[in-house]
Amino acid sequence: MITAVLLAAAAALAPTPLRVCASAHLPTDPQMDSLLVAARRAALAWRRHDFAALFTVEGEVRLQLPGTEPTGPLRAAQAAELLRAFAGGATEESAEVAVVRRVDPDRAYVEVERRFTVRGTSAWRSQTVYLGMRWEGSGYRVVEIRVVPQATLH
Image 1 (cartoon, rainbow, N blue to C red):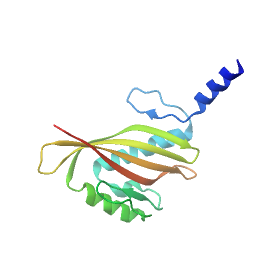
Image 2: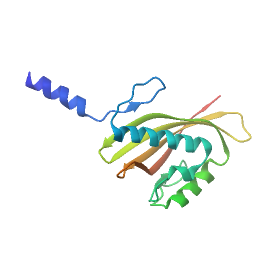
Image 3: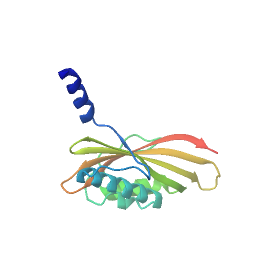
Image 4: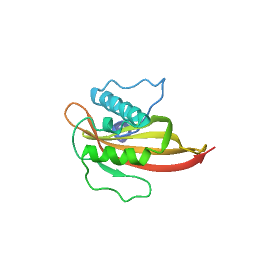
């Protein structure tokens, strides 16, 4: 009996991803609410190619973009400029939050599914954008971005 209770408690406390959809009932934890707001703000900034908006608080960020080595720590303005150059030739169809997960009290990650075309082509492409987030007192800040290419969609 005690083992069953302990297993149930451990399962309840394990970090699990929150998949986001329009009809989902979301938790009322203020820190999780802040994470969801930050995730949606980041997806909107990506869709608009407003990369400076990803970094609302000054701090260092690391990038890993397809075909490149991971960067060392970059200032927000440098990271925004690299992202602008990376995505500048694309026309965004969508950038939607797919998953948010709080890893521990100070760290979380967000998956954004990006769908786009490269200008001058008609083939849709998709990528997953992973955002590493850090809790800093009153909200989450982007500290890492990894972009993973997926299949070409027709």
